[in-house]
Image (cartoon, rainbow, N blue to C red; front, top):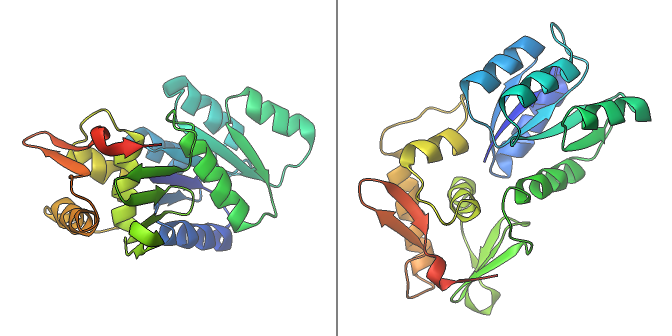
Length: 228
């Protein structure tokens, strides 16, 4: 999943972007309000973390402009403005959640997971495919007898995006847009390499293919084998 982090505190933005990338998210960053809004117009994001006190453009103005263009993208306000009036204003303008500084990274990560789960109807954080259990909250995959399957962060990000969008075929271009950020170098075969590795690991633990390749179109989840 691809996130946009708009925050003017250099130390905080560096710490958060490293932490979020470590748990598997693609993260683009901006320390200026207008630069952040420009990134929103240029790219497609699954969630935006937005500070309110920003140079060149206030966070609430950015929030309003984002909502004029997109009603579905999840937005989490991250700010030192702790009074209730400002929280209410942010939520009324379309924010999905509000976290006051200082905060714990674990709480931020949990709130991000919760907001992203709202994008689809599944209520459970776990999915089962034959002998495989996919834990969306812990971002881990288990085989038979609770055996941990070594799924790398980018591989899990691909699996997660396909699960969230199950029921439709996802092109390689869409996967790149949502899983790789602007700071990462790309090469033409990157999706095939990651998908090949992921499918090999999953197929060792089940009879049916979990990820189906629709030739010339993209990839989709084999819904026939899944259980909530």
